[in-house]
Length: 443
Image 1 (tube, rainbow, N blue to C red):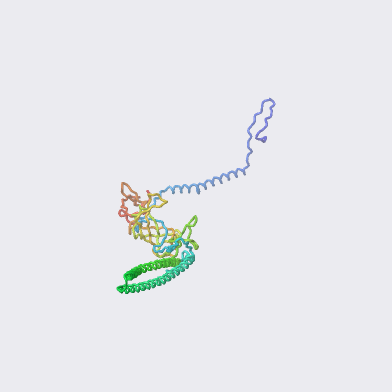
Image 2 (image 1 turned 30 degrees about the horizontal axis):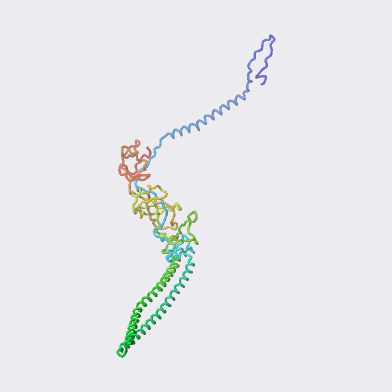
């Protein structure tokens, strides 16, 4: 501390301690006083400017924001629609499912491998080849069966020749037996000039020839039946081999698959290991397995399902707008053309939840419109033409009656109205309002 602010006491001659006097600040020059006054003036001016240009406008803004704004809407006349949205996937109304051919031959476990097929999305004409199944092994088997048929046919011819020889020999034997019988009869007729022993021997010879001739005649019928049975067995064997060959020839023809109609080719999905994939060239298919579709792109539809509780709202012919998830800006007109009659449940849903299939036919065609695309349809359940339309939030109810606050010169007045058809956002007013009136939205 300096000596001026903290002076050191000096002893007095009398021995008493000296009293300290307060130190006075030095007198400021006149120029410094003017500077201090100027600083005070600037501070006062800045304070006044902040009040005028900052505080007062904010206060005015707060006062202005305190004014209550009541939202209103105008009563308009137009078309009110009640809609609902359903989700589904696109499909074709007119299509043909291509399946692997059913094997008619006895070797039904023969593997069938897709040798070639058209690409998915290709346009094909009726009768055009769209797929081929490898039939080389079957063709080799057909060649073996043809050899078997030729061998069976040769057996029939050989056996027929042998039977004809046997038949001729039998006829010759009968003729000989007939001659022996006639000879024995003649000799027996001259028995008067013979001895008793000779007459008995001639009689026995005649009877023996007669019995032998009768036996050969009876054998003729049996031999004829036996030969006919032998030929029938051989012919049956030949016919069996021919049918075997015909079935395989039919199978190998069906291994070349043609398009049954004009349309777009859509390959089916198959289970490949741990996931679903599109069928490919070289895959092995089983008889009756669907692996391809030919669809008519001009007859597309949206295949959806609705809850059974909502089924009463849908009718055939209701209009709709279809949108596809893959093409957000694409909107197509459509109509409901099929509603299922029986509700069914799904294995992923609770047992008490039932849905009904519903199909919406899309009007027109578009190159982007192909099967198996996810989308939605806004179905118009009901609509009113030329109705007075107000927002639903403007309607409130008291004692079972509907009211709307109508703007007047003195404010808002409650007006009882009759409400008609409504959707999620608007409602039709049947009576109580006029077009162009301003109504209150919030309450």
